[in-house]
Length: 415
Image (cartoon, rainbow, N blue to C red; front, side, top):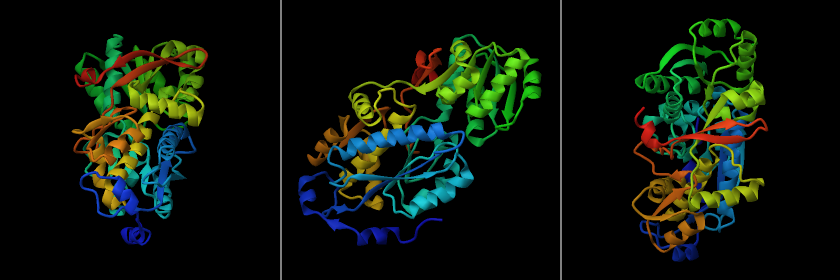
């Protein structure tokens, strides 16, 4: 259910700021700036087994808001933040979405692949722009006007996993994924890419999460003699699987995890000494360039470290793009500025890398092409961007992640 009369309520709060209009000469701008309160809502799993993914979103969004707020805000207004917890459950996501919507957000960040399908159809009727990192392959062909994906599709993640396994000559894979939709959508592109390059799936387990034992399923699967495991499980479930594998004497082959494998809780569930030998995870390929350096500087200021959480650069980019679109449109009304998202993010245009430098160009009346912290955020016709590939990372015994292999987009395209 969405709020009725959103545009009318916003219109009552509109302020005409002639000075802002005079300062901003971008083509296609309204004759009067429409500036109201700028509220960023965050919809994410803030508790439960996947709270670590929610942390990725929150940390990236906080860095993005800091970047905007400490560089003039949005048309002079600072971004304020509200949050709601989905607990990683699509059933809980809908009332959480409604609680946020009742507070009149200007745009939303989130949710994840765990919940996106439950709320995807709510954004267009509510005229609420959303910037998500949900990797669900269902979004590959979405036609929502107000939803944008700033992170890559899970289909590219799955293909990168397959490419790494083949690179390591691991050609007999056991698939272990939980039976949730966000995990099961990874399986078809993973199987397709893996088999196309000589790999064989010896068994495919779709596990119910958080059971006390998987001994029977694992024992049967290992009778097929896999030489690697490709998996995605939550920390609690993976810890049980690792304990069962140890009991069966099978915790002795490489485990190639998704980006879940970058969570320290997963490595600890295996045991750091074992994880350092067997476990790898996937991260979006480390970007470079001035936008990424700006992100690292802001992240250090906000969070006290440059060891950024996975996907946080893509989340940061979503916040910056939203603020730039409002600046281009001279309005904080989503029904006005939503059409400017593609104008500020996609070519052609003058490439710019930081919020203040992009705003300066907009005020000079120039078309811009924002180059994100996570790489070019060029949205296709389905509002998807695809990033810069994937990096395979492994754990050290001290609990740090180190890169071991990069799968570039050109290789992913072959899978």
